Image 1 (cartoon, rainbow over the protein chains, first blue to last red):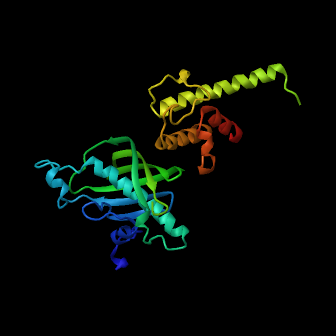
Image 2: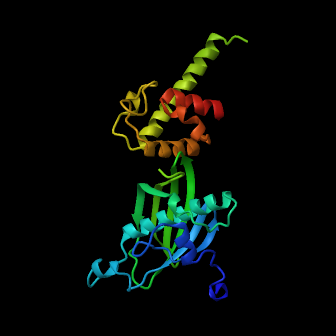
Image 3: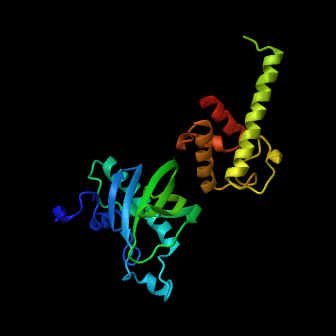
Length: 163
Length: 94
């Protein structure tokens, strides 16, 4: 039913689930709307009151946790290198490459500029930078409407083999 | 062609300048708790030297690329062993 999706959709949630090992309740991105494999990507996440994390963060004052915004950027980074690995193996950009996902190695200069509430649609942008060995630097940004709500620089790792 | 004494002195001075600049870059980008002037040119950057780790090297590679436009790839990680080697790499590729 691809025709029912917004034209900007590049990767559906099901596509993302093939690229990432994450599953509920830690599968965070709803849709990828822009993608240059190995370079950059854009994704959206709709924050819903149905998300169980909001029951505890906080009762009576629901705010989407800032650390999860950082995790969204890390997951988007995995989409960037996962699709690059799939493409360089001569496959479609969507393939079963979830085993390549490594670790979050560093969070640097994370800024949370305003809270994110249920009902917000968060747009994430991630850009892959310098790479050294398995380490990849990533700059990320989250925004709601025209407002930037979070910026961060991360280092993530990609697993090449079964290590 | 042999270098004149003045040219040699000038080259040495320029080298020292780049070394000092690199030490400041190291301390600032990696927020090291050391005085840049106290870092030795041949001091190892890892282990018992400045005790950098692999995540610091990624940050350092980014900093060098931004400041000097010189890339450090997996093939030249030897250049990250000491400050002198790093400056050699930058000067050779600038």
